[in-house]
Image (cartoon, rainbow, N blue to C red; front, side):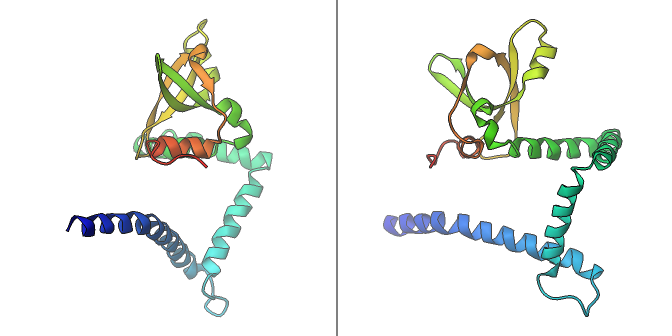
Amino acid sequence: MNKLVTLSVKGLVAVLPLTLTLYFVYWFMEGTESLLQPFVPNHLYFPGLGILLACGIILLAGLLMNLYFVNGLVAFFNRQIEKIPLIKSIYGAINDIMTVFSIKDKDTSKTVVSIEIQPNMHLIGFITGEKTGQQLFNDEDKIGVYIPFSYQIGGYTLYVKRSQVTALNISAEAAMRIALTGGVKATK
């Protein structure tokens, strides 16, 4: 009986990540398709057009963000959203998460760090607030380091002395994977 349970758990561990990933991709594609289908005339519609339109809209938004006027317009709307009590919390959290996940790998050498919190005890984090640390703690040489929680999206920011921080030679993606999974899987 124990062997059956062990085999079942091994099978679940093998199948679940792939199944959930495929389901998420399917859910996203289906949602995008059903959201954009009403805006396309029936004689022009074909399966997959909604996904192509969504990709095109995202690409167009990225291109438009290079224009000064559009950046100003987006900044204006961001300021307006920041004035709405409940919405600003949700919007701010999503915006912060996108900022953390969009850390560029070219900046990894100074972004992914280890903080020594006690002798021989370290946390993995991401430098997010060098200037903020200097502003908050005037003459002290402190920097902001975001420490993500394991197995959930969330975390906290520590302001620590620069001497407690050691740069790690790994990609931001690998560091995030280690932090979010509690280090269960080694980096490749």
